[in-house]
Image: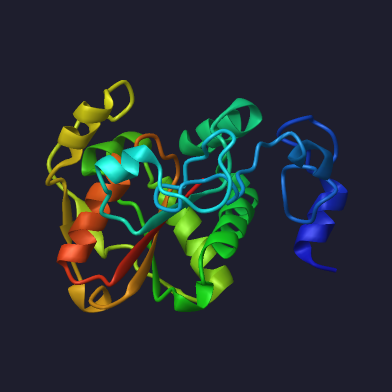
Length: 233
């Protein structure tokens, strides 16, 4: 008997949403509670930034991306940052819910496979955080997601391909223009031999305006990356 099954017998897992017993192996969200999560589909989403537009159909580019084209080639997001999903992600970001990783990776893996040609992905890179945020939080939540996803799609995860520099403010609470200015010049590419000519899957947790993803993609492309596909929870 697998250790995980034995542990489930001795200490049954409880759903993080409803509190009932979980009916999914090695997960912490039950099947019924998954129906309460607002998953995003590719229908009605901008083919660049991935944001959904009400009543839109088919592939299109939103007005924001037409006006100010981001440096990434595309972004796929798994769920809307609302209600139960928002609470779960905040718990995961605060280290109070790191055990939710496999559930959350289920979500981004589904988003990646529905949006991208996974066979074309060369490497998976987690969004880096500043040393100040790293010390404050104690870990980089995106690294755990990127590692697990890379293992599932059989790709290499390069954790130090790009780093954060400087001391930017936290993006929360800033306007879109302030967010763009706040992240300018705050990324530096390392190990460029693993970047040049490659299609990169850049993993982040939450996307608001997309300014951080765009600035990181800009740095990766300056270092020689072929394509940068964003992937966020």
